[in-house]
Length: 64
Image 1 (tube, rainbow, N blue to C red):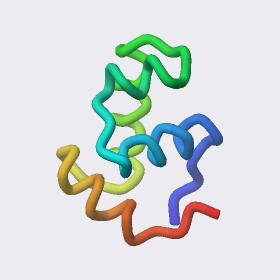
Image 2 (tube, rainbow, N blue to C red):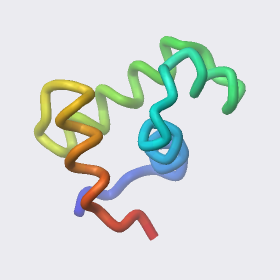
Image 3 (cartoon, helix red, strand yellow):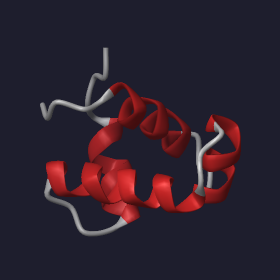
């Protein structure tokens, strides 16, 4: 499993709940751009190219 930062793990949890980038940014006190960049980094680590594939892959991972 890739080594996710604590922030990436937070973003992943919100993503799995179906939150938009804007909602994630609001909940975590971040900018939309920061969330988008973090999601791009997560997708790179998991070798996926879109949000749907990302959600499918991370739903199978244990993030503990």
